[in-house]
Length: 341
Image (cartoon, rainbow, N blue to C red; front, side, top):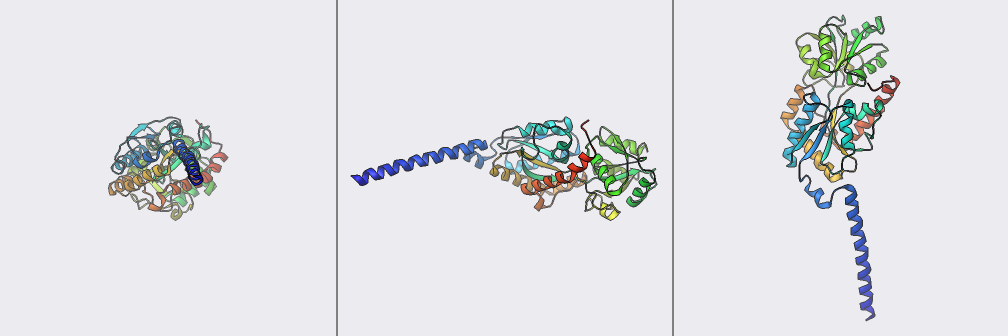
């Protein structure tokens, strides 16, 4: 009789403890914004990918190419939503405040996830409010000049700049843009000075460069390489430690005489912070499969972009890259007193 009462009491207490444990577990999944079964079944409906630039540009095409290829792995489409404005910060901000369930993602750019916070007063934190998924592509810039510039190589260009400091003009596509930031690093490493001329886009900057109205720029390959191949612009170096796959004849900055002038306008996928690790892993696997597609590599090469090595395609590698880039660029940007336009 006594033994029976003891077993009943023990069972009741055990059931009570088990119930509390299950409630706590359910609450944990609720905080994560996804149930255990939903994590296994992800994705069960289309995913929205916010691209923080207008349609038609190189970064927009990068996001669309990878998104379309990810569909084969995920079994669901990634629906593109272009949200431009404020140098991409409006679109990125929408994702920062979205539900952390894996169904709203952001195409993150070097300009939005590294440079932006050093210039703009944002309503979110590019590190604390996002979960890295994977690096998609890197896009080293190319140092080019008008054919009217007398220098024939990068060492000669630096020497020419030093003959009359502050006289040469450099085209940018606005404050904090890759051409602007790259030129600031060029000044720092070579002890030279430039006069900056802002343009509304790379194509417009290239037009004035072709006309000889500005002296030089450090711009994305997709814009300048056709003119370089036609002999209408002079290319000095690629701002990376490896030559471009699509233009192997152009030396690296290390080879050309300004070692360490590395500037790469990379793109990556991010989710809101708090997105379950299982969902991040599922999305990362889809990106890895997409980047292994030979057609993706071919299209990226044509745009002057590089697929990162497999070891750099993990969420951890993306987080490390972002942290290193912030540590490198924020002091340079703040020392130059760059302000939002």
